[in-house]
Image (cartoon, rainbow, N blue to C red):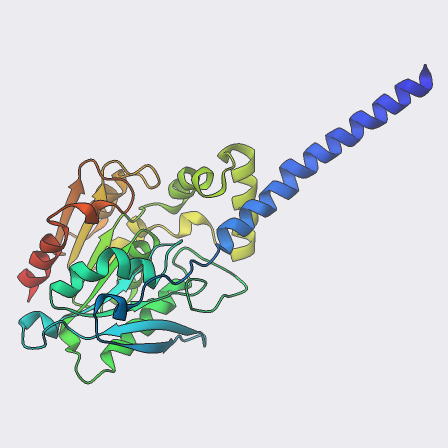
Length: 305
């Protein structure tokens, strides 16, 4: 009887240890890796597939990464919009190919010169040991892209515009808050506060619940990064933005709270030119499906020039 009791007790201890290992180590490590090193999307569309004239380019960042991009000629170089250069920033799980597929035709038909590029850890660009940093290191990628287009002889320095979705939009806001060196920015579906964003997004991205699993995983990630998710809050940085802004968010976004738009707009200085569009019945980064999406953006840009 005592032998059976000892075996049962030992078995229970093993189960508790395995359960604790799963909850406090295995699942958080899996979740951490899922968030730091998302799988790259396969390339499925190129500019020549949609009759665009372009050049494959390499953009070198300040920390030595060689990012891959497509530099697309304007559709008609005799039109006024051909003087405007648009730099397109993708989301955390996306790449330049996805942006070309969803946004390329709309912007190309407006006549802009366009740069599509893959940020670090995405698409054809190289991975880093640190992994995705939700805008902290990705700001270097935006800086490199802006410097690249400005170095092109055909680019008008006073007509460079940034467009981004989701993480790309947040990164663009971080960048602009620091540099304020472009003519305008269009931010679609950015979060406002990083700590709030990750609580909402963690279960969607990893499949694990926030309580316990998410809290432990994010603590591990913050230790890995050396900063907290509260540090990646565009609504905090937006107070120094003087560049004209167009902020867009779908009201049916369940990944990033649509209230983020209000937070960012309120944080922008009073004298900063700002326009916003709350899009009914559109989920995360789905506002582009609105028939007037590209014309609204074009009107915002043309009003500035």
